[in-house]
Length: 112
Image 1 (cartoon, rainbow, N blue to C red):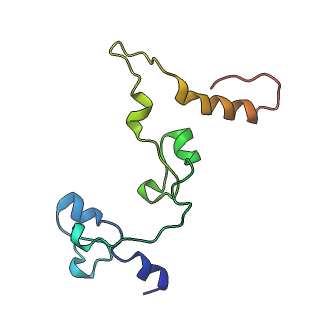
Image 2: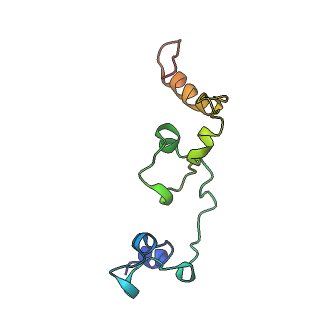
């Protein structure tokens, strides 16, 4: 086992164990089978201190829970959804507008 593998051993829950309650690797699995096996991992002081740009722009990130950046909860974007189906708060769009404005080479910007 590499040094990195040793550091990460049983620091994350086994997906199979969580989803179907069994794992073909059994006790040899490098992922935790239950909270009692889960080990704490020492993280950098900068861990999850900045917003994930990909998640913020697209609503998804290939790294998922392993991403070292902050992902907004999906529900927070829609907390301002009224019962009639209209948004009452568009502040979450302001970041997108700023990015479109700053990346535009012309003096005028449009919201995409």
